[in-house]
Length: 298
Ligand code: OGA
Ligand code: MN
Image (cartoon, rainbow, N blue to C red):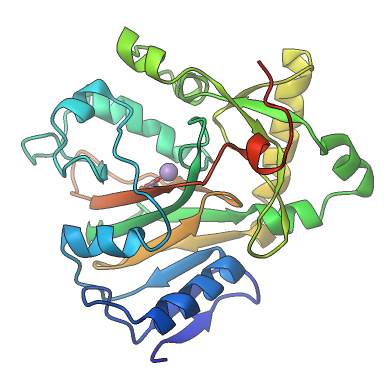
């Protein structure tokens, strides 16, 4: 085994050195990386020079890569191809977007605490975000550990949450940013889906909250009560002891476990500086209710 690590905290976020992800990685190193990933939930691989195919090859070690994008516009003519989410402030021509651009309004949602693709029936397992160009001020990405946040809940709250099913929808989170103009095809493709509010991560056996700004309702609960509960949990999860801030350097590959972390982008002058990143998202094995043997509500 060649890899070495430097962990930020005992159980959350580690940097991984001495592995070149642009070359075939040995089975032994892949195994070691996976063990570290299940433990730390966020891994940072600095100084990687990754062609798109290298990025995808590494992502596929964790499962199938999502090929569908949310915006019809990006599904039709993706700047980076179908395998990547375009996490840049560039238009399809590669120029900084306009103040009024639809992509810009849509991507405001990335600044809300969320986890990727929880609004898909089969949600996101992990995301791998690679920085090609970073900005001099701001544009950090923050990560919150939902396992540690779960552990710190009171026994009463743990009991209250057990078995609750939340409805996640991309329209719910986008409405929070004022983005309401989904075209019919986008809305139809992505109706709200059920996900457990507390889940167990199979590889570590750890329980985790599964909260995101994509939640709009909780099954069997009045909407106002659900909203209050989600906001209470959100405030709990994003306390500073559960949060890590990643300050991007060029050629960082950062991967996170969408099943048990939240993340959000932070502000930067997106009409002045180019920030260019691409994200591969790996699908989970099944809907969270199915994974835990809970009946999927109609
Ligand atoms: C993402 C995301 C935030 C950022 O890539 O999924 O939410 O800082 N990114 O760009
Ligand atoms: Mn995201």
